[in-house]
Image (cartoon, rainbow, N blue to C red):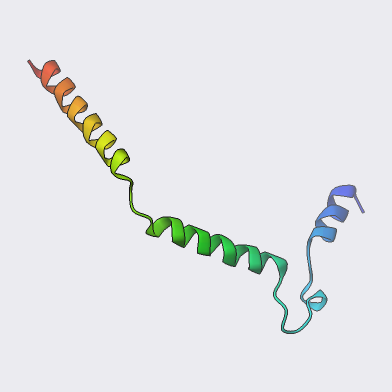
Length: 69
């Protein structure tokens, strides 16, 4: 068996290795990442960032109007 195949085999966990009632290690990581993503997604956009976006849109509109003239 090659080293790469041995590493892959060592990294995988068969369903037989998991005790009944326990979660696979990746399930816990996946759950925590989902919780973090959901929390970040619920955060509002800071006013400072919204102001910067508004200034950028104004600058783009002004640049387009100068090109048209």
